Length: 63
Image (cartoon, rainbow, N blue to C red; front, side):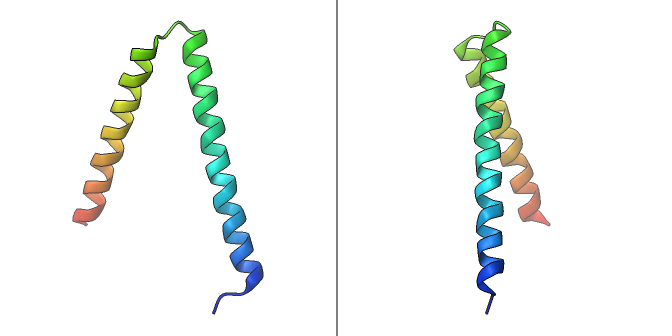
């Protein structure tokens, strides 16, 4: 059975990663908008990222 401190440490690490991802997304969105990109450009970028993640996940499943 895992130690309580280890569980708290894992939960804290997960929370910090999730927070970092949210900050990164907001920063990227703000920077893109400030650089003149439109909403449809951001959606296109998001679609490309989802496609890359999907491809990477499918490759991982094959291994």
